[in-house]
Length: 206
Length: 206
Ligand SMILES: [Zn+2]
Ligand SMILES: [Zn+2]
Image 1 (spheres, each protein chain N blue to C red):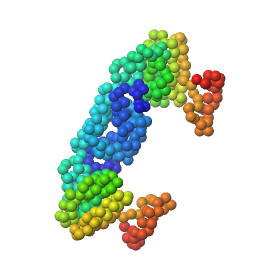
Image 2 (cartoon, each protein chain N blue to C red):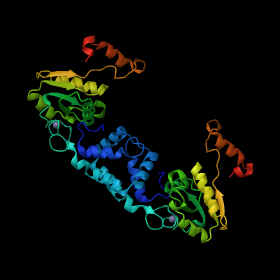
Image 3 (cartoon, chains in turn yellow, red):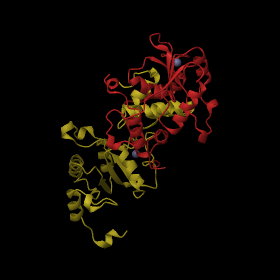
């Protein structure tokens, strides 16, 4: 422990807990702890109060698994959104990323994970019961937006098979060159995929 | 605000407050906020409680200005330390840095700042009244460990003048090549100072 030397225990405790956060090393934790001590007490107390209530105030939608302050999230409650088109993602944070684009106006479904045989994660560990119900109630389209990783692809394949006879249209988000991506720096798989999945010029001028 | 899209307000509030910490950008704040939400609630509540009490539990020693949980810090209370040798620093955190070295067994005095005419910081804004008292009570040595900046040097000069007729021995921490410092990457001032203040070979083999 690098904090022992002359640091008051209450500060050391804060610094130690901050250092347990991802990407926060001991030096950063010390800097943050000192800042929290040197800024006005009201600021630090406000952060403390927000943290104290975080878990009790934020849960998951019982319908779709998104972050929710009530039993049902504001996506599922939004009548202007298309409930027949469901975008399936792995984690609640993925929904935030999708929403940044402003383009999607359907609903979501969060798996809270992905199939990972190595980690012993099978279909039972995923939020699938609620999805079965939604598909059975008659969806128009299920967009598989699992990650572009081996496990994410395997999960998408599994879901496509699971719902193949349900009548729902199943799609997968496109893979290709990211916005601003220089070909020079792209990995070969992305590039060959982008070439394979090329679209006619008209379709690109949206 | 990049957090608006579908993020529950309690989480957005935490993320926003984290983003106000030094060196924490919006993306890091989001990552930390999500981590605080996904780890066990007890962890996050423990951090909240530590933060809530931080300011009321940690203050400054009325004698020397160090961090203290009581009115007097544990340095001033430690009878094994030499109360006649006082190392003067700018900030409480500097004391933590000094203590890492394990070598110093005297007391400290924290100025809580340094002279900075540009920022309107004069002697009245520094923790000097208590230092006057300590010097008047008969110190053996006052080690000026203000920073190696223009303002830090000016502060050291000011203090040396202030106490020149008090009889206390006044010293300044050495400037030179830092441990592990490659000459190639050092600035010219550090290097010429290290050359000017060279010591005889015998004195270096401690
Ligand atoms: Zn929902
Ligand atoms: Zn003290």
